[in-house]
Length: 124
Image 1: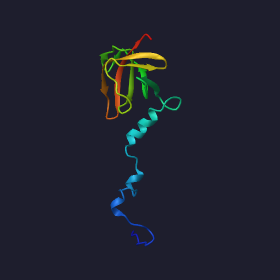
Image 2 (image 1 turned 30 degrees about the vertical axis):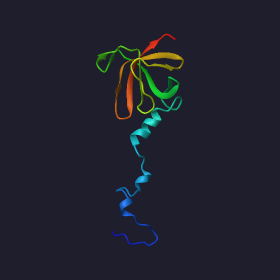
Image 3 (image 1 turned 180 degrees about the vertical axis):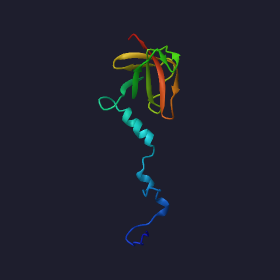
Image 4 (image 1 turned 180 degrees about the horizontal axis):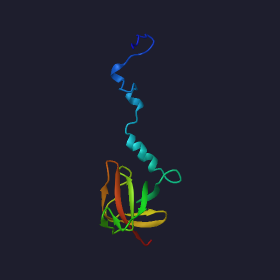
């Protein structure tokens, strides 16, 4: 099977991928676009809006099991958030749905885009 030359079609062999698409048509990072869906606030996503020092960001909030990652849990909750949305440090206070939490321990990086922080609920 051969393809004949058609003068009406522009030919840019350097700009085509093996799928025959121009690279600009591809998303920059497909993993990041999937995370965007997860970090969409409810009711369409899993995220809650958190507030730290006047800065709002989306995070996935969960209660901690007794044996989280095979170690005894110290905090009552944990949040998973995008790396570029907020910077949390040990002792930072944040509010989620009018409840106040304090970050305990150093937040841990899960992957290139996400961070996991342990929280303990504090009185307002």
